[in-house]
Image (cartoon, rainbow, N blue to C red; front, side, top):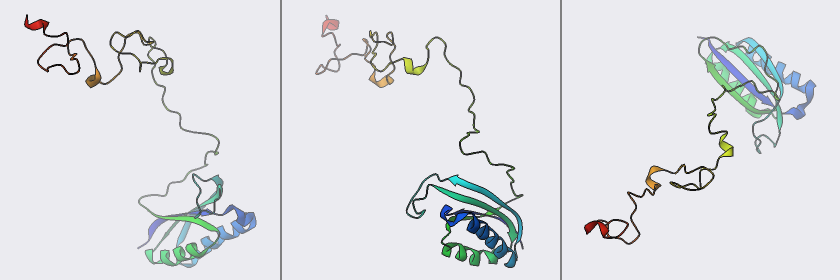
Length: 180
């Protein structure tokens, strides 16, 4: 029974454009000779890598290629063995696809971000957060926040709950004036 697969290759940019095209075509023909039906080969081109390591030979960029194909599970082992031995392949990822293949008509250029977060409402009375400094304020403080207290509730030092250090827990902070 034929399953759907996607194979992503990250190829070394130092192989050159002529060897790149030969590598792309070599893996396409290897898939076809193994009995797979190659539905799509998408060359994403030279892209910046998210990270670099010794396994990636300290490369900053690499060529990305996506193969979408259908075939039996038995054809995957020899292809993965060939990918591991190929010096031009920095990384590869083989995935099973459930449902239909996803086609991206055109990738966004690397220097353009396509995600635009929704606008956040601003509190017009308080101004931008960076213009305030509430950290130094206590209850009734004269700091730049105007007396607002932004600490956790457990750290509040309200007058009703104030207890002096070393005082008896049953006595008030003002002393024993409440007993008289």
